[in-house]
Every structure is written in structure tokens, then in C-alpha cells.
Length: 193
Image (cartoon, rainbow, N blue to C red; front, side):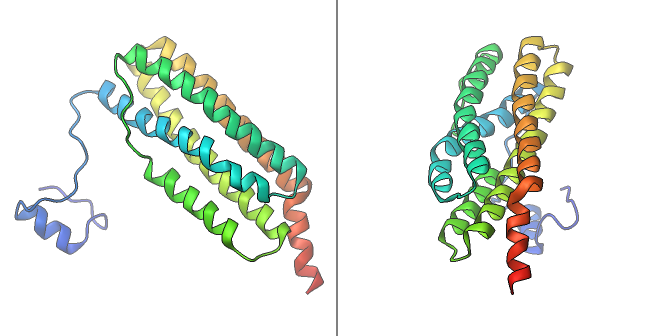
């Protein structure tokens, strides 16, 4: 039995040593399977984003930020199309594997919707939440691209390069929006107190 210190609780380690059933990750036989596994989670994440960003967009009062949210939501559909093409190159059909980090970040956005904070602070929170999602997804897609290059899957690598460019563009745009007003508007509230 192998353990990474701090990742499993003592009870989980005891269960693993005693062969009690604990949640384990799928066993992979090759890099192609790992690539597919990662992208399956992103496929479901893109669908969730496409569906769930609508409510957030309605609550945003910054015109630039609202437009960026809508663009991001629409691009999720385009990313899913590219991912479908990738799955066809990998000769698999996508599973319903969820991306727990993205789902957790979407839950955080949901809590922003329910908060009773000012419009300016909500805008700043939504901006940060979408930046976090984009940053995470960029990391996953970049890792998948490295795998595809190692596997010499040029078309897959090219499709992932396009997706990464969209994510990077969104992150840069959100940063500009933050600098150009959203965080400044939120900071003004501190000065009013």
C-alpha cells in the first residue's frame, strides 16, 4: 500500500490496509486512457458551464463583465464540439464523468447569487470565480495537450491548442475588466465606509 502523506485520513489508510473498499481512481493502462479521462471531465464541465452561467449573467451589472460571461458561456458549446472531435480521434465516446473542481467552483458562484452583498462586490466575486474556472480549465487542457503531443496525436493537439487559446483569451479579458473598473468599483465601497 502506498500513501501520499496528508492526502488520506487515518481511517482511509486503515481501510486501505485492511482491504476495505475505499473510493479509488480508475486504473489506467496507458497515456491515451488518461488523456480521455481528463477530457471526459472537461466535456461535462463545459456543458455545466453552458447551462449554469445564465443566472450569473443576469445578476452582473457591469456591461463588460456580463458580455464576457455570455461569450464564455457560448464558447463552452464550441469547446464541446472540439472535444467531440477529439473523442472521435481517440475512438471513444465521452462518459458522464464529472469535474469535481469545476462543480465546486460553480457552487461557489451559486452562493454569490444568493448573497446579499452589493452589486459591485457581486461583480468582483463573479469575475474572480470565472477567472478561477478558466485558470483551472487552462491547466487541464494544457496537460491534455502535452499528453496528445507525446502520443503524436497532432489533430488532437491542434484542437486543444484552440481551446487553450480561448481560455487564455478569456482570462486576459477578465483581468482587463478587473483593472478597468470592476475591482475599482468594489474598492470604492471601502472608501465610503
